[in-house]
Image (cartoon, rainbow, N blue to C red; front, side):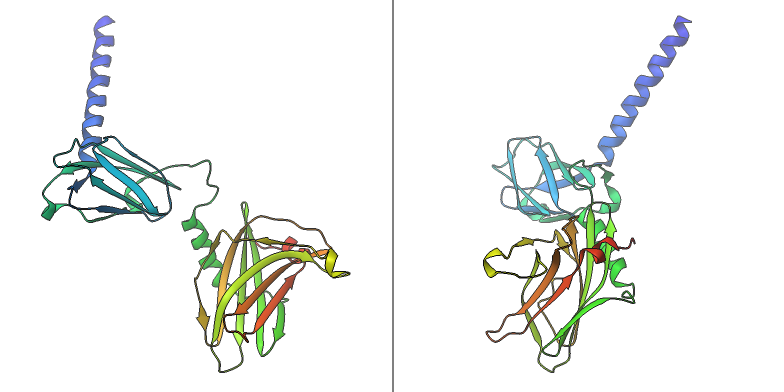
Length: 266
């Protein structure tokens, strides 16, 4: 019995050693140099990073890029860990000549470990995926619409997924003048204005939009993603789009809470 137990312990130790060796061999290597800034590009926003050595500095200049650079020649190298909204990946850092150092490394989303981030209920990649599904659908039969100055704006549909609303909106320009978008505002405001002094409105910001379109000739369609919200019947959800010129055209679409309650699913 003692011999059998000893055998199992040795087998477990060998498997652990083999697993550690395999993991080390599978870790991708990034070659760095003190004369080269290496940019690691992520497919989604970066939430956390760790460099195991103090000889290499790093920061996040924009949401999805992490840049690193040795502080001196022949630094102590180690590992860098990057955590996104839904993944975690590690790279081994090795020092090399400037001519062979990596200037850019792109994280392959198919080659990373999945990570369940409790602070992220839906990743931006998932938001884009659902938004693309939304624009492929036909508008509601009873779509809400407004027309003004030969411009029309239509609420194609509202979708609810998890903690988010996906608001699918389109516009049509019936003139030959290109429409330059200055700003798009989303407000919850009073349905009826009794007195100007009592008029109340709350501006809300989308957490994501599918397209960053600044102008269009004839047709425009976009999907805006909002954290789930509610408002009373005496208020409306107002989408207001203004043109950038001084005498620009402004058009708005008021959406009742009943339309929000009738949100579909993808």
